[in-house]
Image (cartoon, rainbow, N blue to C red; front, top):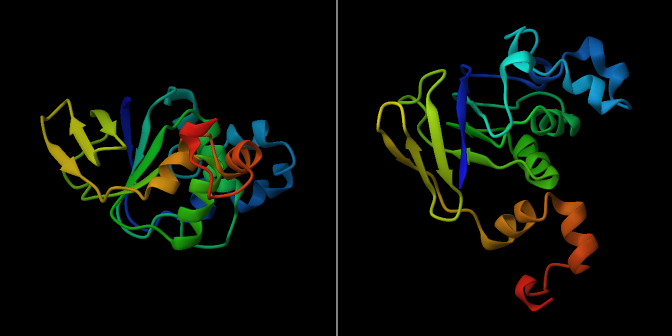
Amino acid sequence: MLKGKAFKFGDNISTDHIVPGRLLHLRSNLAELAKHVFEDIDPKFTERVASGDFVVAGKNFGLGSSREHAPLVIKMSGVSAVLVKSVARIFFRNAINVGLPVLICDTDMIDNGDKLEVNLEAGKISDLTNKAQLSFSKMPEIMLRILDEGGLIPYIKKYKDFTVNPGSD
């Protein structure tokens, strides 16, 4: 179960909004780059976000260039999941690969600052602030296993491939 506060953004949040292009020289220093996540749309984001919080947005999240470090620095900032109406496919895969869940759901009922509880296995979101109950498509088992291990690289290091039953080790 994931629990945290919602940081709500609008539609069309690009990888430039997540990681400003002028800071790409920091991509070899991810800890420093993570201090700047979302700074052009919320300059205080990294000061206010806490471990377990959520990024909530509208349509077309993560559009733009394929910056694999964009979901990574979101995760490094403490965000436990991204909840969106729709997402760019490359951002979605990059996020899963680094262990950041991206959940596709109707985010209209979630307001900035709402307290949320997310059950990845059940596909359920509870907005503890306004009592709304939301759902999202259940993730394939392999994606849940990759997320449980913290991303694709830790998963492959542990299981060597995708055919291993994770309960067998």
